[in-house]
Amino acid sequence: MRRGAKRARTDRAELHATLDAGLVCHLAVVVDGSPRVLPTGYGRRGDTLYLHGSTGARSLREAGEVCVSVTHVDGVVYSRSMMHHSINYRSAVIHGRIRHVEDPAERWEGLRVITEQLAPGSWDHARRPNRKELAATAVLALDLTEAAVKVRTGDPGDDAEDVAAHEAWAGVLPLHQSWGTPVPSADLIAELPVPEHVLRRS
Amino acid sequence: MRRGAKRARTDRAELHATLDAGLVCHLAVVVDGSPRVLPTGYGRRGDTLYLHGSTGARSLREAGEVCVSVTHVDGVVYSRSMMHHSINYRSAVIHGRIRHVEDPAERWEGLRVITEQLAPGSWDHARRPNRKELAATAVLALDLTEAAVKVRTGDPGDDAEDVAAHEAWAGVLPLHQSWGTPVPSADLIAELPVPEHVLRRS
Image (cartoon, rainbow over all chains, first blue to last red; front, side):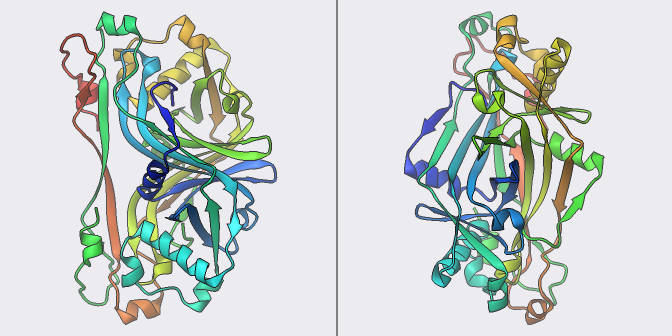
């Protein structure tokens, strides 16, 4: 993404809002000296980001230093010149070392916030993890101290000559996300009304 | 994301379709031994992915081995148990070494496909790069040989006991993306109709 109109922001509220609005983060790790990136769910409580995974997944088991990004694309920026085309976006990037959470209460809370990020209301509606499921699940924590959020909004930043030439349209085409109609699972053994937390998800 | 319902696919058409449907990839590199991930635009021609950036950006200048991910979230999978909650998604992951493109014709073609990925139609509508802009722009290529695509679709994979218990709703809440109404730039010196390639973008 081009430099210029975008701004690095240190505001914690904006960082939290950017993280809270996402479903998937991109987690980068180094394995045998090589970069690996994988999309995965997450949750946040205060200034801690929680991730989870199978205890058998090598990239998570060995994760030490990581870099995590959560990105929202808000629109495409059409400029008079090809080189000033851009994207309006909000992007959080976090650097840090993974902490493997061992304390049972924090593991439970980590799983709760990961669930509530993915599916708000499900922690109270669905069956919670049992002993066996907990044993198979790694809960990882990442401190948000080294986190930054970048936001680009608004019009293109065209060169003055291109603005004056007036030979191409310029503006923003917004990109929106919306929830569709819930699709009940084919293996429901009898009809069940769609619960409010799914039906009214905003 | 949970294992099980998701499938690794090697089909080139599905890989290409997943890449072609995206606006932003997440590019992971190793800098001084540490992982870095950044969201950035891209384009594809055949089995080559093109990226660009400022010639001054260290992470791009020094990029050797990289990992790139393009992820689409298609819906949230609500299961009877918390641990089987999941996401329906399409995700392409590419490993490889960055090639710095020096050939002028390939650099031009790389910039064209990056533009057309971000803003189809803009290569013919907007002013193309001039000599100075070209000199300031690095064009990078990544071979798609080591690329895989994973796709998860459909219902949750609940345990049989949870299906039989019938105590929680299960199904999928689809997530849709749509283009909004174009917003003309405030600095247009006179009215210009919104061009068809913006107005009719699908």
